[in-house]
Image (tube, rainbow, N blue to C red; front, top):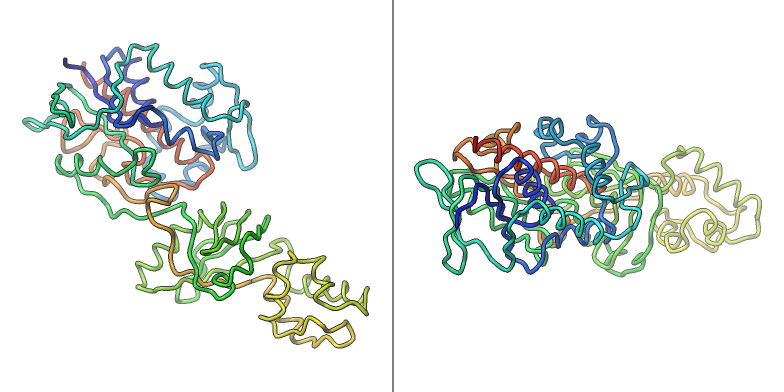
Length: 420
């Protein structure tokens, strides 16, 4: 059987592409190699599914540092506000949380996945699950259809590749789409992990003395080997048995990967500012005042009221201070050092976890070869791309899923329009 449009991949981009293409009057087949649709979507946002971000478009694009500007046209077609209206139209009430993140009121990703799958079915989209695609068929400079792993050939006038990247492979994202893109003549920009925890060889990491320590509302900065600050993110982080993780660590990770590649280094210096709203002088005065107010108390106990308890012994060691001292015996020069450490605690990282363990894949199908208004290949007629297979990556917080929904909708709509 032949179809107007075949969508490969049943994730957020693929489901939206199927909905948009069928709404445009096309006969659509949605193929996924897994046993159910929307698997990565179902675990997104900690299982709550952060469907988009409410920020204004210019600000939203800034939070997609991996080629976000390419999305101007797609977001003009289907914006974050349109995404919200779409889900509200499906009966899913949304709520806004910190930093513009939009979640279903149910706090269940399954609500979102079920609604999308129901919408796809209601619009008459044919669905094949447990059907890996072996090849996309090209004839005479245009798409002709697909060949399944079982040997079946299905014809189509347009094919949308929405197969994802290489991150979180247990959801089906194993990089299949890159080979189909290359066969059509596309180049793949180098893949790398992004939005990924970082590893460190620091002794305090290896000894696990900080393992499990969470820091709230701090700033994390990444520095290059020339001593220039590359990026700073504020928010929460956590120390792990292998290094560091948490929202601001994930956001900084891509810069660490790029610095290691650009400068050929094996370590990248990071600093943590525990009190971004205060100066080093203020920290010095406040901590000294605390010690003065309880002059007979050991400084290690004084600092427990100011710093996370787990961090105090390490801070004192790094500052060269004896924790058994009391106020009268504090060496002022070393207390200055302590204040500087509190404002700029150093941690060298030596890499990240693998691309498979990352939340998002950096790199992908070269955007110079894609029409940003339609998501169609400039090299092969009838071939469209959307979602993480493209060289687009954003921070966590609803930005990647916004890119997926927006490019998916645009690809589906324009694939249907291309048939006429």
